[in-house]
Image 1 (spheres, rainbow, N blue to C red):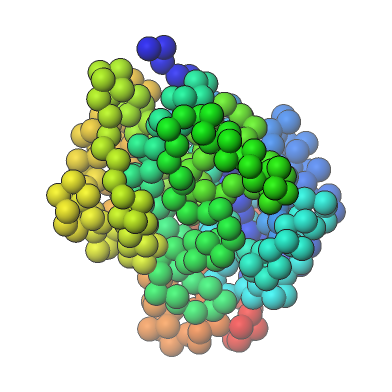
Image 2 (image 1 turned 120 degrees about the vertical axis):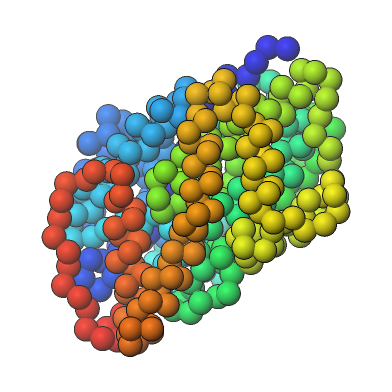
Length: 394
């Protein structure tokens, strides 16, 4: 069987904040997107549903090293341009204290249609995600691997959590983002299909019924891309630390290669009840990796470090073939120091323990996110904004 290309593309969405108030901007500066595009040789930067958001997408990459180069350039361009306007991007899935009811939505027919169709379920989409595309040209293989890969989606979410805070409160969830996104239809764990033709029939029924315009309106955690010959993994929160983002991209492509390798040997990953996979998805949303996931083969909850070591062993041959062993093994570092969600909560608690108000503690989290988004990107230095007065960003 001919090997898929296993090319990679990574998309990240950022929230843009004012460096003085630390709150979200109401509108991006009119020239910001143009300035970003002028610095990145045509790589993709575009607006998102909320005006306080900006989305980047890497070029098609043949290795994790290329992903790192592309992602670094893109993050750096957004950071540099934001600096010039007194702003800063946050690579995070929710803002610590912004209120969705005060946010404005981007113009355009696509966004207007989404707003009208989904109403408040869309108007509160003050969330960001990270998407990883992997090039798999054969349509039937793409569907087969999607069916098997769903098992690993909760593991990826557990390592990427960055949305524990919402409208100024600790939600108790490490990934609150998905509780917001799941308010839309056609989200969550994907359906299973016996063939690509079966998937195409489902899309055709929904488009002919006038429910959706095209397959881009199917927002599963994992889907065949409607635009590219790729399988698109969408479950992850945005990773604040760029090394964490590269680790997740490496795990996605390595697991897919492992599943393809099994298929070449007339083997496959066992498929399990979608309900059990959804249960693991919930556990990842609630706890990240703190309370383990269900090992569906053993039928019991297993500590996440044990599951991770087993996963790393499963994909070792594939990570070596793809040249991303270091990136994959960075997952151990994520367990050691926690996800972005863990670090945000630690910063907030430290500020509160030191006598800060809730508003001041949330500002401290934003300052932490500004600096961590920049780490490893090496943008031009910029002075810190003066601290906002107590309660000024409540």
